[in-house]
Length: 425
Image 1 (cartoon, rainbow, N blue to C red):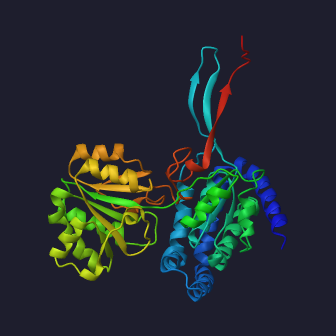
Image 2 (image 1 turned 90 degrees about the vertical axis):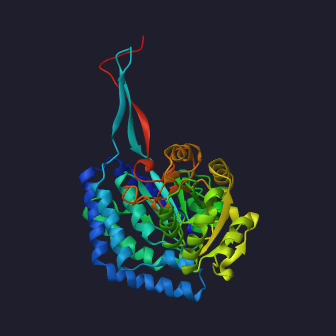
Image 3 (image 1 turned 180 degrees about the vertical axis):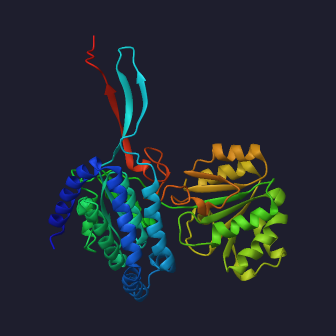
Protein backbone atom coordinates (compact mmCIF):
# COMPACT_ATOMS: atom_id res chain seq x y z
CA UNK A 1 0.00 0.00 0.00
CA UNK A 2 1.21 3.49 -0.87
CA UNK A 3 0.47 5.13 2.50
CA UNK A 4 0.69 8.71 1.26
CA UNK A 5 -1.67 8.07 -1.64
CA UNK A 6 -4.06 6.12 0.61
CA UNK A 7 -4.19 8.90 3.22
CA UNK A 8 -4.65 11.59 0.56
CA UNK A 9 -7.66 9.64 -0.74
CA UNK A 10 -9.06 9.32 2.78
CA UNK A 11 -8.53 13.04 3.33
CA UNK A 12 -10.26 14.07 0.09
CA UNK A 13 -13.21 11.81 0.85
CA UNK A 14 -13.48 13.20 4.37
CA UNK A 15 -13.42 16.80 3.15
CA UNK A 16 -16.19 16.08 0.64
CA UNK A 17 -18.24 14.21 3.25
CA UNK A 18 -17.81 17.06 5.76
CA UNK A 19 -19.79 19.38 3.49
CA UNK A 20 -22.67 16.91 3.35
CA UNK A 21 -22.51 16.42 7.12
CA UNK A 22 -22.57 20.16 7.82
CA UNK A 23 -25.82 20.43 5.85
CA UNK A 24 -27.40 17.23 7.25
CA UNK A 25 -30.77 17.47 8.97
CA UNK A 26 -30.90 16.60 12.69
CA UNK A 27 -33.42 13.80 12.11
CA UNK A 28 -31.15 12.20 9.51
CA UNK A 29 -28.15 12.36 11.83
CA UNK A 30 -30.20 10.84 14.65
CA UNK A 31 -31.38 8.06 12.34
CA UNK A 32 -27.76 7.26 11.54
CA UNK A 33 -26.84 7.19 15.24
CA UNK A 34 -29.70 4.84 16.08
CA UNK A 35 -28.86 2.68 13.07
CA UNK A 36 -25.25 2.32 14.24
CA UNK A 37 -26.40 1.52 17.78
CA UNK A 38 -28.80 -1.15 16.49
CA UNK A 39 -26.06 -2.72 14.37
CA UNK A 40 -23.70 -2.80 17.36
CA UNK A 41 -26.34 -4.48 19.55
CA UNK A 42 -27.14 -7.00 16.80
CA UNK A 43 -23.46 -7.77 16.16
CA UNK A 44 -22.37 -7.88 19.81
CA UNK A 45 -21.11 -11.46 19.48
CA UNK A 46 -19.14 -10.57 16.33
CA UNK A 47 -17.54 -7.58 18.04
CA UNK A 48 -16.52 -9.64 21.07
CA UNK A 49 -15.12 -12.38 18.79
CA UNK A 50 -13.07 -9.81 16.85
CA UNK A 51 -11.90 -8.34 20.14
CA UNK A 52 -10.78 -11.80 21.30
CA UNK A 53 -8.32 -11.88 18.38
CA UNK A 54 -6.87 -8.56 19.50
CA UNK A 55 -6.68 -9.66 23.14
CA UNK A 56 -4.86 -12.87 22.24
CA UNK A 57 -2.30 -10.95 20.20
CA UNK A 58 -1.92 -8.32 22.94
CA UNK A 59 -1.22 -10.91 25.64
CA UNK A 60 1.19 -12.76 23.38
CA UNK A 61 3.03 -9.49 22.78
CA UNK A 62 3.25 -8.80 26.53
CA UNK A 63 1.05 -5.68 26.47
CA UNK A 64 0.81 -3.97 29.87
CA UNK A 65 -2.21 -4.96 32.00
CA UNK A 66 -3.61 -1.40 31.93
CA UNK A 67 -3.60 -1.44 28.12
CA UNK A 68 -5.16 -4.92 28.00
CA UNK A 69 -7.90 -3.62 30.31
CA UNK A 70 -8.57 -0.69 27.97
CA UNK A 71 -8.59 -3.03 24.97
CA UNK A 72 -11.17 -5.46 26.37
CA UNK A 73 -14.74 -5.59 25.08
CA UNK A 74 -17.48 -7.60 26.77
CA UNK A 75 -21.27 -7.60 26.72
CA UNK A 76 -21.42 -4.67 29.13
CA UNK A 77 -18.99 -2.45 27.21
CA UNK A 78 -20.61 -3.27 23.85
CA UNK A 79 -24.01 -2.36 25.30
CA UNK A 80 -22.39 0.81 26.67
CA UNK A 81 -21.23 1.80 23.18
CA UNK A 82 -24.75 1.41 21.84
CA UNK A 83 -26.25 3.26 24.80
CA UNK A 84 -23.80 6.12 24.30
CA UNK A 85 -24.88 6.49 20.68
CA UNK A 86 -28.54 6.38 21.65
CA UNK A 87 -27.96 9.06 24.25
CA UNK A 88 -26.17 11.27 21.70
CA UNK A 89 -29.26 10.95 19.48
CA UNK A 90 -31.39 12.43 22.28
CA UNK A 91 -29.14 15.45 22.78
CA UNK A 92 -29.89 18.84 21.27
CA UNK A 93 -28.17 19.42 17.95
CA UNK A 94 -25.78 22.35 18.41
CA UNK A 95 -25.33 22.97 14.67
CA UNK A 96 -27.12 26.07 13.42
CA UNK A 97 -27.93 27.43 16.88
CA UNK A 98 -27.86 31.25 16.84
CA UNK A 99 -27.08 33.06 20.08
CA UNK A 100 -26.38 36.60 21.29
CA UNK A 101 -28.45 38.16 18.48
CA UNK A 102 -28.53 41.88 19.14
CA UNK A 103 -29.53 45.03 17.26
CA UNK A 104 -26.75 47.48 16.52
CA UNK A 105 -27.28 51.26 16.20
CA UNK A 106 -27.08 50.86 12.41
CA UNK A 107 -30.18 48.65 12.48
CA UNK A 108 -28.44 45.37 11.63
CA UNK A 109 -28.66 42.36 13.93
CA UNK A 110 -25.40 40.62 14.88
CA UNK A 111 -25.19 37.19 16.47
CA UNK A 112 -23.22 33.95 16.49
CA UNK A 113 -24.08 30.66 14.80
CA UNK A 114 -22.64 27.33 15.95
CA UNK A 115 -21.03 25.38 13.09
CA UNK A 116 -19.04 22.14 12.71
CA UNK A 117 -15.24 22.21 12.80
CA UNK A 118 -15.09 20.21 9.54
CA UNK A 119 -12.82 17.14 9.45
CA UNK A 120 -11.61 15.72 12.75
CA UNK A 121 -8.75 13.24 12.95
CA UNK A 122 -8.78 11.06 16.05
CA UNK A 123 -5.68 9.03 16.95
CA UNK A 124 -6.10 6.61 19.83
CA UNK A 125 -4.67 3.51 21.47
CA UNK A 126 -6.24 0.36 22.85
CA UNK A 127 -9.83 1.44 23.52
CA UNK A 128 -12.05 0.18 20.68
CA UNK A 129 -15.10 1.86 22.26
CA UNK A 130 -13.53 5.16 21.14
CA UNK A 131 -14.38 4.16 17.56
CA UNK A 132 -18.10 4.24 18.34
CA UNK A 133 -17.93 7.25 20.68
CA UNK A 134 -15.91 9.35 18.25
CA UNK A 135 -18.05 8.38 15.27
CA UNK A 136 -21.23 9.30 17.15
CA UNK A 137 -20.04 12.65 18.45
CA UNK A 138 -18.52 13.73 15.13
CA UNK A 139 -21.65 12.64 13.29
CA UNK A 140 -24.10 14.51 15.56
CA UNK A 141 -21.95 17.66 15.52
CA UNK A 142 -21.95 17.67 11.71
CA UNK A 143 -18.30 16.75 11.23
CA UNK A 144 -16.53 14.10 9.18
CA UNK A 145 -14.07 11.89 11.05
CA UNK A 146 -10.88 10.03 10.24
CA UNK A 147 -10.22 7.49 12.98
CA UNK A 148 -6.84 5.86 13.46
CA UNK A 149 -6.92 3.30 16.26
CA UNK A 150 -3.95 1.41 17.62
CA UNK A 151 -2.62 -1.66 15.83
CA UNK A 152 -3.47 -3.71 18.94
CA UNK A 153 -7.22 -3.10 18.31
CA UNK A 154 -7.33 -3.46 14.53
CA UNK A 155 -9.85 -6.34 14.44
CA UNK A 156 -12.15 -4.71 17.00
CA UNK A 157 -12.05 -1.32 15.28
CA UNK A 158 -12.79 -2.70 11.82
CA UNK A 159 -15.75 -4.69 13.18
CA UNK A 160 -17.18 -1.54 14.77
CA UNK A 161 -16.43 0.42 11.58
CA UNK A 162 -18.68 -1.95 9.62
CA UNK A 163 -21.56 -1.09 11.96
CA UNK A 164 -20.85 2.63 11.54
CA UNK A 165 -20.85 2.42 7.74
CA UNK A 166 -24.11 0.49 7.79
CA UNK A 167 -25.83 3.09 9.97
CA UNK A 168 -24.61 6.00 7.84
CA UNK A 169 -25.65 4.37 4.57
CA UNK A 170 -29.13 3.44 5.82
CA UNK A 171 -29.70 7.06 6.87
CA UNK A 172 -28.64 8.32 3.44
CA UNK A 173 -25.39 9.92 4.60
CA UNK A 174 -22.01 9.30 2.91
CA UNK A 175 -20.29 6.31 4.49
CA UNK A 176 -17.03 8.23 4.08
CA UNK A 177 -18.23 10.60 6.82
CA UNK A 178 -16.49 8.23 9.24
CA UNK A 179 -13.41 6.44 7.95
CA UNK A 180 -11.43 4.03 10.12
CA UNK A 181 -7.87 3.70 8.83
CA UNK A 182 -7.34 0.15 7.61
CA UNK A 183 -3.56 -0.03 7.90
CA UNK A 184 -1.51 -0.46 11.06
CA UNK A 185 1.47 1.25 9.43
CA UNK A 186 2.57 4.12 11.69
CA UNK A 187 3.33 6.18 8.58
CA UNK A 188 -0.44 6.74 8.31
CA UNK A 189 -0.31 8.79 11.52
CA UNK A 190 2.56 10.89 10.17
CA UNK A 191 0.46 11.69 7.11
CA UNK A 192 -2.74 12.38 9.03
CA UNK A 193 -1.18 14.96 11.35
CA UNK A 194 0.30 16.95 8.48
CA UNK A 195 -2.69 17.02 6.07
CA UNK A 196 -3.76 20.57 6.81
CA UNK A 197 -5.63 20.83 3.52
CA UNK A 198 -8.00 18.06 4.60
CA UNK A 199 -7.95 17.91 8.42
CA UNK A 200 -9.11 20.76 10.67
CA UNK A 201 -8.24 19.37 14.11
CA UNK A 202 -6.50 16.33 15.62
CA UNK A 203 -7.72 14.72 18.83
CA UNK A 204 -5.14 12.32 20.33
CA UNK A 205 -6.26 9.73 22.88
CA UNK A 206 -3.48 7.55 24.19
CA UNK A 207 -0.39 7.29 26.29
CA UNK A 208 1.99 10.07 27.11
CA UNK A 209 4.50 8.89 24.50
CA UNK A 210 1.97 9.09 21.68
CA UNK A 211 0.73 12.53 22.66
CA UNK A 212 4.24 13.93 23.14
CA UNK A 213 5.11 12.70 19.65
CA UNK A 214 2.03 14.37 18.16
CA UNK A 215 2.69 17.64 19.99
CA UNK A 216 6.15 17.71 18.41
CA UNK A 217 5.16 16.61 14.91
CA UNK A 218 1.60 17.72 14.18
CA UNK A 219 0.99 20.59 11.78
CA UNK A 220 -2.75 20.43 12.52
CA UNK A 221 -4.23 22.06 15.68
CA UNK A 222 -4.98 19.63 18.51
CA UNK A 223 -7.47 19.16 21.35
CA UNK A 224 -5.55 17.11 23.91
CA UNK A 225 -4.42 16.20 27.39
CA UNK A 226 -0.98 14.80 28.10
CA UNK A 227 -1.63 12.74 31.22
CA UNK A 228 -3.91 12.49 34.24
CA UNK A 229 -2.28 12.97 37.64
CA UNK A 230 -5.55 13.44 39.53
CA UNK A 231 -5.70 14.33 43.24
CA UNK A 232 -8.09 13.89 46.14
CA UNK A 233 -7.52 16.29 49.04
CA UNK A 234 -8.96 15.38 52.45
CA UNK A 235 -9.61 18.71 54.15
CA UNK A 236 -9.59 19.57 57.85
CA UNK A 237 -13.40 19.57 57.62
CA UNK A 238 -13.74 16.26 55.73
CA UNK A 239 -16.45 13.76 56.70
CA UNK A 240 -14.69 10.57 57.79
CA UNK A 241 -17.11 8.14 56.14
CA UNK A 242 -17.02 10.03 52.85
CA UNK A 243 -13.22 10.03 52.71
CA UNK A 244 -12.88 6.24 52.63
CA UNK A 245 -15.72 5.78 50.15
CA UNK A 246 -14.48 8.47 47.75
CA UNK A 247 -10.81 7.45 47.85
CA UNK A 248 -11.71 3.79 47.31
CA UNK A 249 -13.77 4.56 44.22
CA UNK A 250 -11.40 7.20 42.86
CA UNK A 251 -8.39 4.90 43.10
CA UNK A 252 -9.59 1.31 42.81
CA UNK A 253 -12.64 1.21 40.53
CA UNK A 254 -10.33 1.15 37.49
CA UNK A 255 -6.58 1.64 37.45
CA UNK A 256 -5.99 2.32 33.77
CA UNK A 257 -8.06 5.47 33.19
CA UNK A 258 -6.95 9.09 33.04
CA UNK A 259 -9.48 10.16 35.71
CA UNK A 260 -8.26 7.67 38.31
CA UNK A 261 -6.81 9.34 41.39
CA UNK A 262 -3.03 9.00 41.55
CA UNK A 263 -2.24 11.29 44.52
CA UNK A 264 -3.89 11.60 47.92
CA UNK A 265 -3.34 14.72 50.04
CA UNK A 266 -4.42 14.78 53.69
CA UNK A 267 -4.67 17.79 56.00
CA UNK A 268 -2.25 17.41 58.90
CA UNK A 269 -4.93 18.00 61.53
CA UNK A 270 -6.85 14.90 60.33
CA UNK A 271 -4.06 12.67 59.06
CA UNK A 272 -3.71 10.50 62.18
CA UNK A 273 -7.48 9.97 62.24
CA UNK A 274 -8.16 9.39 58.52
CA UNK A 275 -5.10 7.64 57.12
CA UNK A 276 -5.32 4.34 59.06
CA UNK A 277 -8.79 3.50 57.68
CA UNK A 278 -7.77 4.55 54.19
CA UNK A 279 -4.50 2.61 54.35
CA UNK A 280 -6.26 -0.57 55.45
CA UNK A 281 -8.85 -0.14 52.70
CA UNK A 282 -6.15 0.35 50.05
CA UNK A 283 -4.31 -2.69 51.38
CA UNK A 284 -7.38 -4.88 50.78
CA UNK A 285 -7.05 -3.89 47.13
CA UNK A 286 -3.27 -4.53 47.17
CA UNK A 287 -2.57 -0.89 46.31
CA UNK A 288 1.04 0.17 46.83
CA UNK A 289 1.29 3.39 48.87
CA UNK A 290 4.20 5.74 48.17
CA UNK A 291 4.25 7.97 51.21
CA UNK A 292 5.86 11.07 52.60
CA UNK A 293 7.64 10.48 55.92
CA UNK A 294 4.68 11.66 57.99
CA UNK A 295 2.14 9.49 56.18
CA UNK A 296 4.53 6.54 56.37
CA UNK A 297 4.81 6.83 60.15
CA UNK A 298 1.03 6.98 60.61
CA UNK A 299 0.37 3.98 58.36
CA UNK A 300 3.10 1.88 59.97
CA UNK A 301 1.72 2.64 63.42
CA UNK A 302 -1.70 1.51 62.18
CA UNK A 303 -0.19 -1.86 61.14
CA UNK A 304 -0.95 -1.40 57.45
CA UNK A 305 0.80 -4.11 55.40
CA UNK A 306 4.43 -2.95 55.37
CA UNK A 307 5.07 -4.64 52.01
CA UNK A 308 2.73 -2.09 50.40
CA UNK A 309 4.39 0.96 51.99
CA UNK A 310 7.16 2.68 50.03
CA UNK A 311 8.99 5.94 50.53
CA UNK A 312 7.82 8.51 47.98
CA UNK A 313 10.30 10.19 45.67
CA UNK A 314 9.86 13.66 44.19
CA UNK A 315 8.95 12.05 40.85
CA UNK A 316 6.01 10.24 42.45
CA UNK A 317 4.15 13.53 43.04
CA UNK A 318 4.04 14.06 39.26
CA UNK A 319 3.33 10.49 38.20
CA UNK A 320 0.32 8.99 36.39
CA UNK A 321 0.72 5.41 37.60
CA UNK A 322 -2.16 3.72 35.73
CA UNK A 323 -1.64 0.90 38.20
CA UNK A 324 -2.52 -0.08 41.81
CA UNK A 325 -0.14 2.57 43.16
CA UNK A 326 -0.97 5.83 44.91
CA UNK A 327 1.17 8.68 46.24
CA UNK A 328 0.18 9.93 49.71
CA UNK A 329 1.26 13.21 51.28
CA UNK A 330 0.34 15.03 54.49
CA UNK A 331 -0.06 18.77 53.88
CA UNK A 332 -0.49 21.77 56.17
CA UNK A 333 -3.99 22.57 54.93
CA UNK A 334 -5.95 24.02 52.04
CA UNK A 335 -3.33 26.53 50.87
CA UNK A 336 -0.62 23.85 50.78
CA UNK A 337 -2.95 21.40 48.99
CA UNK A 338 -3.85 23.90 46.26
CA UNK A 339 -0.20 24.82 45.80
CA UNK A 340 0.81 21.15 45.55
CA UNK A 341 -1.92 20.35 43.00
CA UNK A 342 -1.17 23.37 40.82
CA UNK A 343 2.56 22.55 40.93
CA UNK A 344 2.53 18.77 40.48
CA UNK A 345 -0.82 18.07 38.85
CA UNK A 346 -1.69 17.71 35.18
CA UNK A 347 -4.67 20.11 35.13
CA UNK A 348 -7.01 17.17 34.56
CA UNK A 349 -9.29 16.44 37.54
CA UNK A 350 -8.92 17.16 41.25
CA UNK A 351 -11.30 16.77 44.20
CA UNK A 352 -11.70 18.04 47.75
CA UNK A 353 -13.56 16.23 50.50
CA UNK A 354 -14.88 18.79 52.96
CA UNK A 355 -18.00 19.95 54.79
CA UNK A 356 -16.76 23.54 54.80
CA UNK A 357 -18.53 25.55 52.08
CA UNK A 358 -15.99 28.38 52.06
CA UNK A 359 -13.05 26.00 51.57
CA UNK A 360 -14.93 24.12 48.88
CA UNK A 361 -15.53 27.36 46.99
CA UNK A 362 -11.86 28.32 47.26
CA UNK A 363 -10.79 24.92 45.98
CA UNK A 364 -13.16 25.17 43.01
CA UNK A 365 -11.93 28.66 42.17
CA UNK A 366 -8.18 28.29 42.72
CA UNK A 367 -7.33 24.77 41.51
CA UNK A 368 -6.31 25.20 37.87
CA UNK A 369 -7.76 22.02 36.37
CA UNK A 370 -10.27 21.09 33.69
CA UNK A 371 -12.59 19.44 36.24
CA UNK A 372 -12.70 20.34 39.93
CA UNK A 373 -14.96 18.44 42.34
CA UNK A 374 -16.35 18.65 45.86
CA UNK A 375 -17.17 15.45 47.76
CA UNK A 376 -17.14 13.26 44.65
CA UNK A 377 -14.83 10.72 43.03
CA UNK A 378 -12.54 11.91 40.24
CA UNK A 379 -13.88 8.98 38.21
CA UNK A 380 -16.90 11.14 37.34
CA UNK A 381 -14.74 13.21 34.94
CA UNK A 382 -16.21 11.58 31.89
CA UNK A 383 -18.41 12.73 29.00
CA UNK A 384 -21.05 10.08 29.63
CA UNK A 385 -21.28 10.95 33.34
CA UNK A 386 -21.45 14.68 32.49
CA UNK A 387 -24.44 14.07 30.23
CA UNK A 388 -22.55 14.56 26.97
CA UNK A 389 -23.57 11.12 25.68
CA UNK A 390 -19.93 10.23 25.21
CA UNK A 391 -16.70 12.13 24.84
CA UNK A 392 -14.18 12.58 22.09
CA UNK A 393 -11.51 12.97 24.77
CA UNK A 394 -10.47 15.09 27.71
CA UNK A 395 -8.86 18.45 27.06
CA UNK A 396 -6.55 20.17 29.51
CA UNK A 397 -5.98 22.97 27.02
CA UNK A 398 -7.45 26.37 27.89
CA UNK A 399 -8.33 27.49 24.37
CA UNK A 400 -11.43 26.24 22.54
CA UNK A 401 -12.37 23.23 24.68
CA UNK A 402 -11.57 22.14 28.24
CA UNK A 403 -12.52 18.99 30.14
CA UNK A 404 -14.60 16.21 28.53
CA UNK A 405 -15.17 17.23 24.91
CA UNK A 406 -18.67 16.54 23.65
CA UNK A 407 -20.81 18.02 20.90
CA UNK A 408 -20.23 21.68 21.67
CA UNK A 409 -16.47 21.15 21.84
CA UNK A 410 -16.58 19.78 18.28
CA UNK A 411 -18.15 22.95 16.94
CA UNK A 412 -17.09 26.55 16.54
CA UNK A 413 -18.97 29.79 16.05
CA UNK A 414 -19.17 32.26 13.21
CA UNK A 415 -20.71 35.71 13.20
CA UNK A 416 -24.01 36.15 11.37
CA UNK A 417 -25.48 39.50 10.36
CA UNK A 418 -29.16 40.08 9.55
CA UNK A 419 -30.17 43.14 7.64
CA UNK A 420 -32.92 44.43 5.37
CA UNK A 421 -31.14 46.43 2.72
CA UNK A 422 -28.82 48.05 5.24
CA UNK A 423 -25.68 49.81 4.00
CA UNK A 424 -22.85 51.29 6.00
CA UNK A 425 -22.80 55.08 6.10
